[in-house]
Length: 329
Image (cartoon, rainbow, N blue to C red; front, side, top):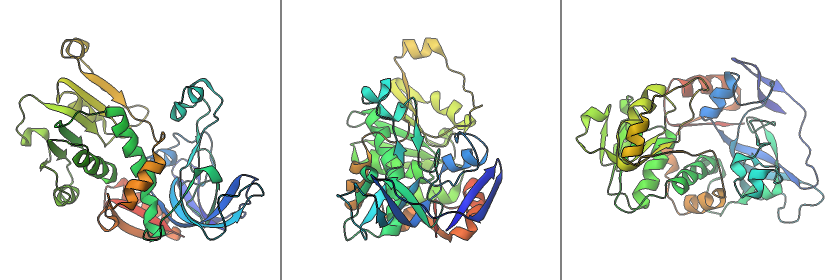
């Protein structure tokens, strides 16, 4: 089969690799679409993935074309979205139900071969069947949505909170949609990309601006979310949290990124700083939300490129052009 292969930091090519075969409790999925995300850029930089070469791609959906000998809940022809998480279910954190903090954390497309390919292997337990009205190629959005759902699980925001989101790429826009549906009084969005800000306005944010100085809110925001991973944005965002508010680090920053905090302010104003890591008990709920139309794929998906253009797709994503970029084998 054809697959995108990251062979060394900064080096990606399309190669012919062996067709996958399922283990007893696995299925082979013919990939309909695979989304690109910040994690893929980190892998390209030589971060996150424990070793290279690697076939990336952890946001995907497709059709089951082979099943393992012990798989009974799925059949050839089923259309599925796939949770890429591969937990050990044995370590301290897994036993506490904090599987996303697994001491042996693994994921399809991060530690094992992923879905930037014609076919991918996945545990049957990680597959969620798609309802008839959902297009398979759109369902690659379910994985990033499940990360956003996990983010809101962490936040536990009270009704009528005032929310500020840094970044109006795919993840920032997903957080906007969830904020609107979890009772936020206002949801403001910041981005230096005017095209992306236009999309935030289209989706109904309260205010959109290039910087927080362009929005009048002297007491700050009850909830501030970074969906950029940018060191500069993170530093600014922490300073915008209101007394008693919460800052969520949702964007994936570089390993070397640093931000300065003011311990006295955090103590004196009872500010909470927290993070949200990938998926935890949220994939099925994200699939349910997606089935109800919480996201409009025509708005969220800006580009659908062939697998042969994977390197160009990564370059476009890294340059901040468009929103969700999908590759289709």
